[in-house]
Amino acid sequence: MITFYYIISLLLGISLGSFLNALVWRTRENIKIGKDRSMCPHCRRRLTWYENIPILSFIFLRGRARKCGKRISRQYPIVELVMGVLFLFVFYFHARGELVFTPEIVRDWFIVFNLSFIFLYDFKYQEILDFSTIPSIIILVLFSPAIGWHSWQSIGLAMLIGGGFFLAQYILSRGKWIGGGDIRLGFLMGVILGWPNIVLGLFLAYIIGAVISLIMVSVKRQDFKGETPFGTYLVLGTFVAMFWGERIVGWYLSLLN
Ligand SMILES: [Zn+2]
Image (cartoon, rainbow, N blue to C red; front, side, top):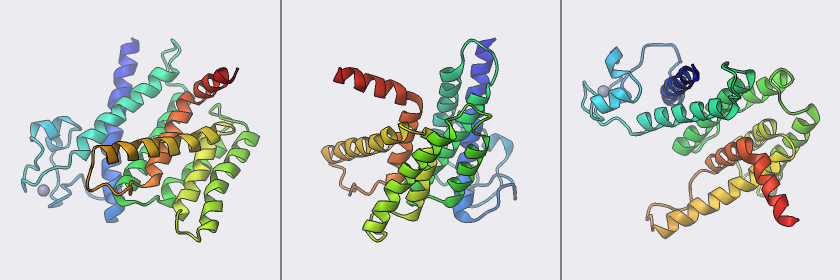
């Protein structure tokens, strides 16, 4: 029976990955969600149901749009697959033998979807939109007692640190190093991670950023100028700290003893 829940989690993730692709593109192009059916990003012709099956359609159409023959970005199947795996992982992480989708699972699915949107949008367009951070901050704070979240004090302090960290840089550099979107993302990181995990999340973002930059330089990617948007590293740091924060801190403290 547990297999059934794993399959549901995977399929839900893949479907929401498909929705995420559409959401990112429609947000950029200013097309309302729910207005018109799914369409080809090139010629905007409507897709038939069999052109719109996550992952499978891409394989079946051999990566080309059926009508206009233009290449379909590999982003589409990759995002769908990654989201499927992430949703599966969240279920696996929280499943404790009980065969239900607990509030913790739904909460983390919500957070993972939200972070994926920020990652993808920042990666593609170097922008962190307010609508991807502010509503989530409000929702997570309001529902925090119901979803087994951090205490108010923990959230408050972590928001102060996450937001303050970027606000300070924003003021110091007069807006040159850091954009307003990073400050809002800092607040969101605080809500997601709480105290003291927020410190780890920020630290990990810089480590991950440095490691990826080194790899890119060492494989001599000519087009790499260190311009990978910082928001993507913040998302990765948040993700790692969210699921493995306690273990990492415990491991680090054990080294000191
Ligand atoms: Zn087309």
